[in-house]
Length: 254
Image 1 (cartoon, rainbow, N blue to C red):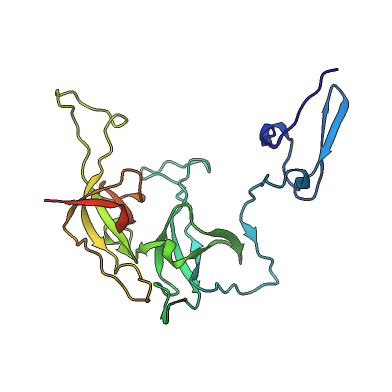
Image 2 (cartoon, rainbow, N blue to C red):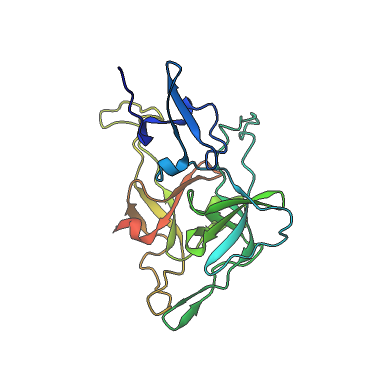
């Protein structure tokens, strides 16, 4: 008699008509109309179903972040391209910015109290995959750590970004248009450069005693940085920018 072995790795959402309610509902597997077994989440403790934003019920009217955390109201995703073409939801870029709604009390390092770097009302840019998303008062918010905020951006121009902590804003050098032999390169084949000019730097990281340690990098430096580090941005002037940690800068060129 043929048998079928089921493991957590062999189960995907494609094989299930719905994954909603998986936390509380058992799932029955069968083959040739013969029941093989019933499994619940308890059967696979390492299997996690990632849900959408956590919804805070209307009875809760305030949300106060603790420690070094910050509550940010997420900026709506762009629904149109620069040319006015309407984008489907799948093609809309995930926003990386929003408005600070509330901040925690800060954190203590050694004997020093370190305040949060931003205030309520500030427009900020944050790391792409940071924080916990919550739906609160009808809007999507993100609760993240102060250190996950890249910088303050009060205008629509990326070059005006004010980096925080150990972050650095770099204008990326233009990619080579031709090969050494003179062949024109398409956009897809252009090598992404890892060299650029520093536009702005943060005040530096906090050391073990709670003091700011200034960065050795200064605006105007031409630098070499790690290829896959940081957050990329496109400026309104068509230039490419990247915001990354100072530790991702490999060398200063001169």
